[in-house]
Figure 1 (cartoon, one colour):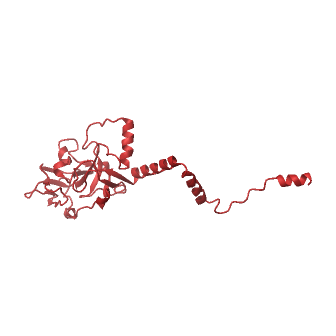
Figure 2 (cartoon, helix red, strand yellow):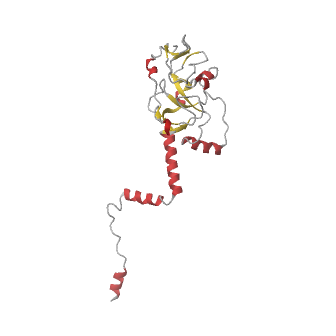
Length: 254
């Protein structure tokens, strides 16, 4: 065999053309996914990051830490909080159960916490695995901006804009309120109360503080819509129809 023939035979063959599947994005995705199967730590980190982003933007599991919303919500329940409920022009409505940051309304002091502990707790709370921040509350909206909310009428009921509210969700044996109050809710604020009135620290307990017990709408984290855990308590959190009868506020002065 001559020298030219030897060189020809030893030359590497040209790179074959990529087929449509070999060069597709889907094929590359499958290749990367196959590699990740052998990297459990990387896969876990990606899943955790995705869950945290989803919790921060769309929907967050929220661990119920107290009995203030019994029997609607019980200690240890995990509820799914819709964070998009009020992002596009909608405001909380009467009767809805909301989660909010009570800083400046229910909490008027600095909450000291070790930064590392706070980071771990925050991540756990975002996944519904740990107690929420001490400044986070879950309550039911009773009055919105402009509403005249009073307690109580001759039958012991709360009135909103002169209409008594039938509160079938109250904890058995609880009165609508053991504290009398008469307030016009400022615009952009909410009057909120727990369903277990005898065990709830809510708007009534902060009447003499800055804000008068009302919660700014922009402090609402989202609307509680579904009990996801335990399985035996899986259900939606509905808005009572009794609030449909409440008339619109008469004006800025009730």
